[in-house]
Length: 187
Image 1 (cartoon, rainbow, N blue to C red):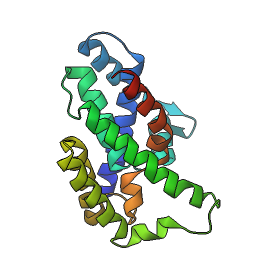
Image 2: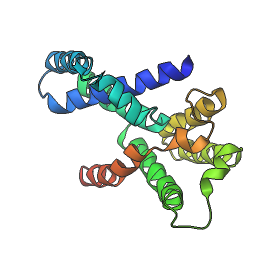
Image 3: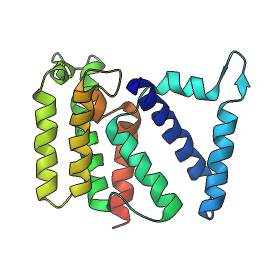
Image 4: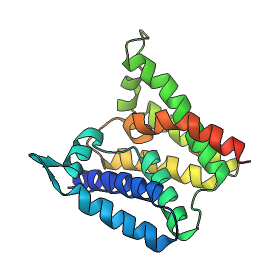
């Protein structure tokens, strides 16, 4: 049941973020845009709807993706920033590096498979070490998100039992270089 809630939250965050990205203006216009997108997501498309299609395509977002999307939504709707720019840079950097280590191997470009390490405590302990380093470097929001990655993994919030899936997903990995450049240019 927790897994279903996480999948539902993942789809809600994606749809709401898409709506906020498309609708400019005051928070009330953006909220109306979110409501319209959510309603449209449930309209029948043949034997399915956009909600179910997106749920099937994405499944569950990583904790980092969910946190970054939640930060984007809250900032767009309220102006309040939960994760400051240095913390977002740290999270996108961790995601980029993790994906560079993980995804080439999953594509068969390496003889070593780092995904295996996510089934034990190795990746979880590494994420905790990075969280601790982030905390002491003044990136508290990033540290909290990374600690939640490990907690969610240990609690089995998602269908996966691999720490990598709580840390990084293809969506945030593909976006991370663009977001790092964007954050750097806005400095």
